[in-house]
Structure formats: structure tokens, C-alpha cells
Length: 476
Image (cartoon, rainbow, N blue to C red; front, side, top):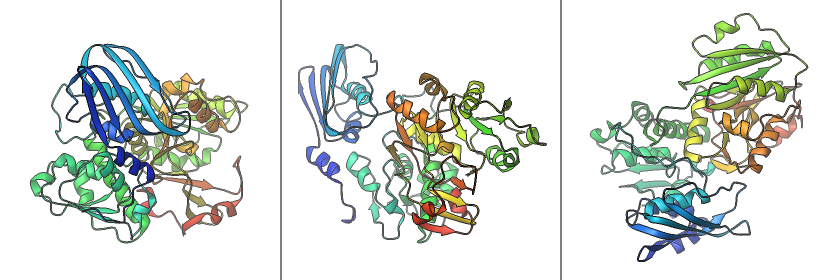
């Protein structure tokens, strides 16, 4: 039973009105979907195995973003055409022609590559692993609304949860869901990945036993109470565990290199301890000492992690320093770390998981949590929309492929606005920016040392909550 308080947005109502359908004439097929999410559902629907040589895919509501891409290469595809709306939103049409019949589901997946950013679709592994898997490109916390963490957020009763586009849209605004005993382990793991707080107390022990121990531990936690931050932290822990252990196609986690450039060796102790304490298993650390000498104990602080230490002359620009660090990186992915901010132990995992389920070129977090050091005050402010595609993330949280950095010319050799310059060039090249949840990152403000300084009152005016120190739930 779904509460009447969950109101669908106008695009969701339009998508529901259009629905989904397939019209066939021989090997020609017309595929109609109200939204991209509904089209994803159809890729695995009852018509997916039927052969077709000519396919036209129509999505009734498609919203323009800075991202765009051609149709991905596909077997037997000899001609295609993509028609997107001239305005910011409207209908989009992808026409495909094949030399030989292909399954309609494959044609729909090919059309999706031109309509939404995505990683390659999960395929069957050559060996049988844990059977509890779900498609995280479809079922994930994307679009989860901050209002869902408030005490008045609706609760759902789900005897057997489904994950079509309409159900996912309603889960984004729900605070909690109680599931019945008939739920399967894969559906339970998928529900946990949406971020809605799951009450699985009625689920049989045999079903629960199929889940990863990390996820079971979160499900067995007592309810978090009415505090919105505590509710959000529980949601983040739950979906992180579900995605990390049960998302199809994740496989071995990619190698990540954290690059850290500093002129302030006195700040290295805390940030290196935070990097060494990351739970992510394949993390390299590259430190660029920008015109300063290595402090005592630097190598010892990095013990246990692959690392490199690079000394760069003081006259080199900040962009040049980041370029040198990136060139030395051994990881497939690169994440930028600032020397004066606070990072939770799951920070790198959060970024890698967000990249997996969003398919974005660059992922990061917003600077919603701010520590005003001179005042001894930690505050939370609204700073963009979490779990959504956007135009900006905090520079100290950026994660993207090393190849994507190189493809747009690397970091600009300038003293400031280096992060912004890279983001702008990525967007102009057709890349996408995704902002995940803000927990696990606290942005620090000091009296001096910032190239952009609007004053502390700027942050205090927009504060929705304050604390005398960093609350544990902020690091999730």
C-alpha cells in the first residue's frame, strides 16, 4: 500500500499517462515509453527477445542536459538517427536499422546510449558468483529527495516490491518501507539500494541469510529516531552496503589514485590518516609537496598504502602541480583531495559507487557540511541537489577517469579556479556531472588561505542546522 502523500511530479504523471507499448509489423517495431526509466524497464520486458531489423524508439518526455552522445557501436547496426527536442524538454526519437535481426531488448539498450549516460550494461559473468544481484543502473538512490529524511516522510507497506519506473519514482520520496515475508533476496537488496529505510523484520531468516553481512548488520540496527541527519546516515550506510555487495556489473573495484597537492606540510598529518583509513581496497596516494620539504614521519604515515611523493618547485602553478600528480597516478580513476578538509572512511567508496550507478563522467559531493574553524561551529546548508546530475561538485571530492582528464587537455596551468576549468571543459566535451550524497565530507573554512572568501556570514545565513563539533553521523 502506497501512501496518498506521495505525489508524482508532472513529468512522472505524463510518463504514467503515456505508459509503454510495442507495435510490430513483421521485423519492424515501434517502441513507445513515457520516460527513459520506463524505456529501461522495457529492455528486460516480455518483448525483449523478439527479433527486429528496423526499430524506432520514442520517449515522450526527455529532458535536455549538457550531456549528449551518439548511439554506441552495436553489432549489425548499419544506420541510425537520433532526434532530440529543440527546447529543453520534449519527445526524443531514436531510429535504428540492422543488417540482420537482433533481439528487441538489445535495440532498446542501444537507443538508451543516446538518451541517457550509462556504463556498459551488465552481462553474465563467465563464472557463477553470488546469485543475489540487481541492476544498479536501474535501481539506485538517484533522485532521492531530502524531504524523505524528515519525520513526516511517508511510510510504505510492500508485500512484494517492484521496481518499474513508477515504483522507483514513489520510493524517492518515501522515508521507510516495511516488507513482507514473500520478498526475494535480490528484491530486498535492490530495495535497500534505493535509500528508503527498510524494515525487514518479517523477512524469513533463509532470505536474509543470502544478503551480505554488512547489509544485514545495517538492517539489524535499531531505528534511528526523528533526527534527520541520523536517518540520512542510516540510509547511506544501507544503500552503500547493498550497492557494494549486490550491484551487478561492479566486479573488482577499479584502482583509484588520490592526488593531494599541498603548500602546508603542517596539515598533512590528519588528512593522511584519513586517506590511510579509507575502506576502499585499491587506493594509491600521490602527494605533491608544492615548494615545501617533506615533514618528519611522512613515509610512515603512508605505510600500508601504495604511494608516491613528488616535490614540485614553488613557482609552479597549482594546475601544473595537479597535472604532475595525475601523470604519476597508477589508478584508472583519479580523485582530488584537499589538505584542509575532513573525509569519512567510506568517502572513496561512495564516489566509486556513484560513478557506477550514475554512469557520469565526473562524480563528487557538495559542500553542504561546513566547519567554520574560527567560530568552532559546524553547519549544514543547502548547496545544490544531492543524488542528481548537475553542473558543479566540491573540488575536494572530484572523481573521474584519468583518461577523461587527459582527453580534455588536463588541468589548466593556472594558480586558481583549476577545478572549475576542468569541469567546464568536461561539460563542453559532452561529459556529465553527478553529485552524490554529502555525508563523509566536511568543507573547512578558515580566516585566511581561501581564493574565494564571501565571509562567514554567507554560510551562517544559509544554515539549516549547527553543531559545536563534527557529528559522527556527518561522516556516515
